[in-house]
Length: 133
Image (spheres, rainbow, N blue to C red):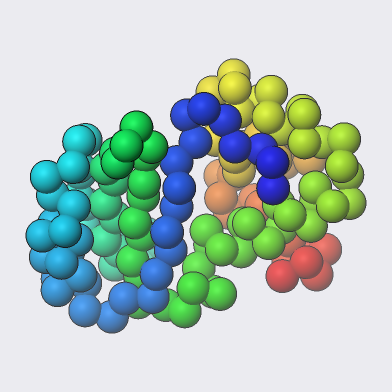
């Protein structure tokens, strides 16, 4: 989309139904990489496994959840964000600047839209109201 910064990571979103096995596999493959962190937690009532690590100076985030990728918030956020950037091409530089100031992508879009509250929920609500998703 052209809004990644030097500190952006690469998010890999996956549908995973056997989270314990997934966590073991992730640890086996990437546990020795710099900055490796593995979390098991619940987000919006759904269990997830998330791993972060650095490979060749680039940060990765692997995110597994027992839900189809096309229904996961991370994917839906990208759909909404792409739609908005296509609709408002001049926003790219503004979003980029906000991210450089330290805002997360969803926070930057919410700032541009004047949305308040939890940026992850607010962006989804906005996308649904506008029938983007």
